[in-house]
Structures are given as structure tokens and as C-alpha cells.
Length: 261
Image (tube, rainbow, N blue to C red; front, side, top):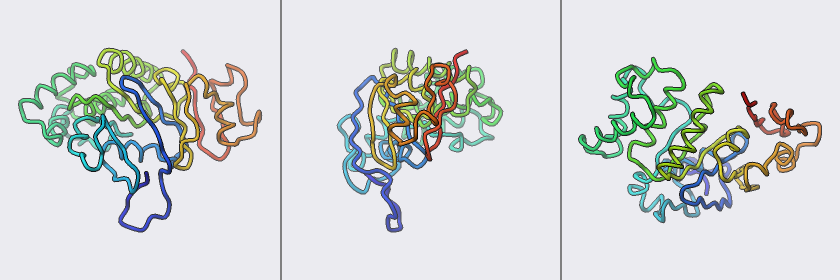
């Protein structure tokens, strides 16, 4: 799959990507900036068209059956730009419900359900810009859940959160979204700690290709250095204590395993 633009393609963003996500599991996508992680999510959410290949969600083609796929996938983008800062949390989510084609009554019902689910009911009438980063991230997740989709595509859902809020989000995703609601999650992350906490499998992307797939515990900083060709041991932590620090992987971005409290 590759990204379609109006200009001739200068490069393929995704090449020979073959990935299957089992229902009720969490699969992480890890890779340097520009590796194709977000592009993959946006294709699965019907926000981008692939120029070749096929992508299916619950057996439905994301190009030929895009309208049906949109009801099956909830997208949680990185950042808060999709929200109107001066509208209340409730008004924002009402707008997104309408965009997804929910009728007013159904939209109100889903609004009540997601506010209760993500724990932001008390601030529903507060302008979005007045929420903390942690509450804003919960509202972004609420947007992804507005149609009660079986599949969630999350792009760095804890990027702007402090360590305590990160762990709360990890527990919520793993225990509630997957454990109780049995939803399937495809998540972009740059954190080994996050991957180990919530992911069943971790997929490594490099320059648009999948270069490794495995259990998060098997993808140690040393293994990542081997994948990306960084010299060891100079750029790689070898002890458990060192693994909690920032780890270099050659010319690519750095992956961070947050220290435990």
C-alpha cells in the first residue's frame, strides 16, 4: 500500500505491508518518523486511499465499502487539532456524532455512554481549550468511541500525558476497552514501556516495510538496535536499569522506556 497524492509519487510510503490483527487483541506499531505508521492507520480508517493492494476491516474493503468501514473503525489522531477549542466537550462530540451519520437521538445516547465510559461527564459543558491534556486525550478517545466501533486505531494516545496519566490510560485501554468491551486496537507508540503494558504484539516499520513482528518482551533495545543496524553496545542499554533510559537506534528516532514509579 502507498499513499495517493495529486502529484506523481516521489516515494511509496508503505510497501509490501502484510499485517493481520486478531479480534480482541492490541497490536502496536513502532518505527521512526516517516516509517508509514500513521499512513497505515489512515488507510484503515478510509482517510487515505491506497494506490495498490487491499486492506480489509472485518472482511470489508476500505475502498469499495468505505461507508461501512467508517462505522467499524474509531480513529484517535495524535494531537487535539480536530477539536474546536471554544466549543464545549459536549458540542464537539455532538458534531462528530453528526459527521458519522448518527441521528440526533442516537447521537445523544452515544454521547452519554462515552462520557461515562471515559470519565469526563463532569466537564462536558467546559470549553475544550480549558481541559487538561489528560482530559483532552480522554475526549479524543471518546470521539473514537462515538459509533461504538469494534476496532480502534490510536495514534500515540499518551503522547502529551505525564507518567501517571499515561499509566491510567494504559490500564483503561487494556482492562476496559479490550478486557471488558472486547475491542481490537491498533496503536502507534514510541514507548517500549507502553508496548509492554498494553500490546499483545509489536510490529516494527522501517521506511514503509515491516521489518519485524513479535511479542513486546522480545523486542528489547538490543533487538531494536539489531533491526535498525545501530552499533552495540555503544548505542544500546544492556542492563535492566539502563533499559529504562533513552535508547539510541542509529540514525532513527529514539525509543523511550519510561521508568517505573
